[in-house]
Amino acid sequence: MKRILFLLILLSVKCPAQDLSFGRMLVDTLTSQTFWGRGYTKDGMHKAADFLAAQMKSYGLKPMNGKDFQQFYSYSVNTFPDKMDVSINGKKLTPGKDFIVSPESRGVTSLGGLVQLDSVQFVNKESRLIVKLEDKLTWSAEQSVADYTTIEIDRRRFTDLPSSFDIDIVNKFEKKFKASNICGIVPGTQHPDSFFVISAHYDHLGGMGKDTYFPGANDNASGVSLLMNLAHYYATHPQPYTMCFILFSGEEAGLVGSKYFTEHPLIPLDHIRFLINTDLAGTGVDGITVVNASEFPKEFALMQKSTTTIIY
Ligand SMILES: [Zn+2]
Image (cartoon, rainbow, N blue to C red):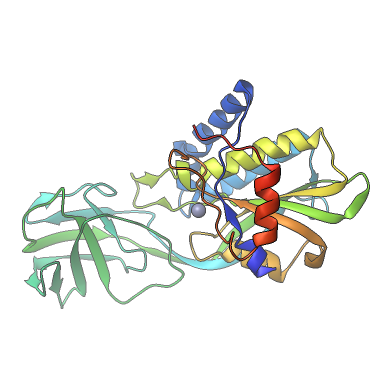
């Protein structure tokens, strides 16, 4: 089952105009400030979960989990809900643009000098601070806190060599962050005990400090929008098999939500006939990537045969 859960597919599907605006509306909503990057601060992920569960209900889907569309669970995660002030060489940097703080970092309030370690790393031992020059900034979520702080600076935007710092960063370790997978079904007309699953993760990275959030349009508001489009359609077009629509959380923290589901399944996993996971569906100019296609050659051939794909 785990192998099936990792079957990822990037799809561009031909949609009538109204479905494109439907998808656009969902992406705009999910990436809005209200949902704060569908992460760990300002209740972003929780608000997104409530919104998506209400949407599924409004389409006419049935909850997979008794009366509740949401399957609750918890995990630990390091968060940055408050101050995110970083000045290097006396210059104030903008979070998310000039720098990111590595997700495992502890909070720290300090100032002082930096010693160069190599061509890209600068440290202050007393403050347990590492300043790194990077070609590209990529954030993620971490389930634990380190005993040091790493600031990653975009070297395209900051060309000097870092020699001094003045920083005020607050982290909050959430030992039991409450999250949920959102699970809806359209019961099958002939084989209700056999399941066709479409899944996507709806969480993203959330916010870094009070003023910066990562909207995650491509990863994975786009995949969620595609899934919800299909859920909307199949709610009024039941199929012989039961159609399941699962929105996982905790993906960015290490596939925590999908792992929890496989360990606490709401449907018998061995009754799943096929699963498609949609991720990064916002592009497609260079074609479509099907992950794990070579691991499932028979299924891949079937999909190629039965799917009409159009590259926009
Ligand atoms: Zn993703």
